[in-house]
Image (cartoon, rainbow, N blue to C red; front, top):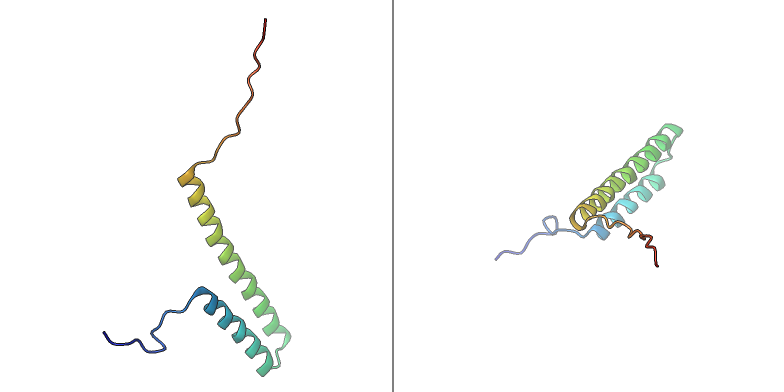
Length: 81
């Protein structure tokens, strides 16, 4: 079986986020960002986080459907003679 090249290897989620962070840092170091650039980057970060939130919400909904929401037990009043 042939070895995969560096480009073909799968990266972990942690490595992907670390790389994304390094990319943003590199951009900010190499380019003097103007106000328009900063505004776009802020919006893109917000949209990125909203995307992550939608993934988490979907997973939560899936788990709740699979395991069912547990209803709280209600007390029943019983008269004692």
